[in-house]
Image (cartoon, rainbow, N blue to C red; front, side, top):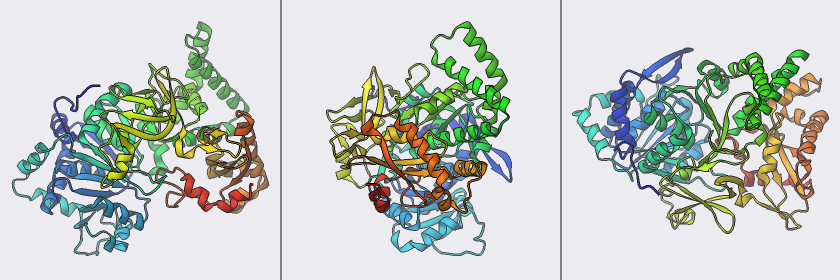
Length: 599
């Protein structure tokens, strides 16, 4: 395994960032909408704004190795603060805006954050509500003044004031450069808190060495190119988005466009038409659902043409060496239907699309491939700096999560657990030596996932803790069943139940938009979300999906009964993580009566 820990002679991201910002100068680094118009910002803008923020924090007392937490939606100031903090020798800790005041207090206190950067008055209110629980915070910095014109608090200042403080600092350029020069590869670049699906969140320490290794090896598989356009919309508190939208663009010169908000992602996709796009399965599922819904609204001829084009696309991409007839048919249907479809969804220039962070139905990957969107599944975790393995154009198999990163090792333990070793493996958990020792043993990261290696390609079979052992002693991985269910446009999420029980049951969260549209089309009366879930026709609709999925599994793996979760869950609810994944243990606890009624 290679011992390289730098890129082009740089041992920290901050040193590389300083160099490329000066080299790229006035070239566009970021684009963000202001009053509905895309505005461009250069690499030099990024460096100068970040330097002012970093120096401002230094003037307020930020010392090397101290943590600064950021509580904001994706925006330019997030990145400016991030590299300002890192350049000043600090550690950036991103916090999801959906976290409650109590969760914020835990994360700030656990990370011993010296400063807290918040986006607006809504996020500031969370701090004010739990101020006494965050004793390490010396100052809170607010990005937006809207709604806070007359606000005054000795512990709070605004970002523009911090920037002015940094610009007025004595000997500023030399001091900031010195902080960058003092950095070392084993310094912590960022804290990324785990989602808390199996307990309290833990702060994973990701070093500069981890990041630089990931960038160089990851690029060999991802084929990132200078000048690529991409869309930033997943939370920057998540390891995947931070690597893709902050660190990789520094390395490769990618232009990052910020989505206006989570609701405008599809609109912004059409405006940008990125060369590369990475999203969690839930977004790919929603995109598929939106397209299939539009198909249902088309004329009979339009539906026939769509189905014919997709069918030819399936056969073309499933055939290793298509014959002349198939090539000609694909050329025709691509020109008549598929190219227009890709234009419609903002994938006109797409060269590579990737998915990860949760299981995805193989049928969904095949469908996107059929319409000309090359979708590749990958696998990773916070503790591996985002990527462990990835399917690539040259080496892929649908259903697997691809081949491990170059210069890393993956093996399967005797118990079936996936173990990982390499310089992308994190430095440990912040102030959690016991849990670090539990997950890092003899240099191997114990992922907690079960899987298998076939011909060098890794396949995930589920979380070890999620394996269901039925009363009859049968071991069942629920992830594959749940993934098949979620392929339906009418199902947003599902949790299969059955541990120590006679048979499997399932709790299902419907896709509100698609089920509402279906109900309206079929004249099914409903007044709210609860009545929609209880409608007999909706129950039959979901029952038909469950029946079809059951046919793909052995008798013991089939779902006997299901119930719909009648509460419209959001990331604010304890059942969901900030990345919209159901917390299995929490769901089973909160809906115990509903589960027991099925047995």
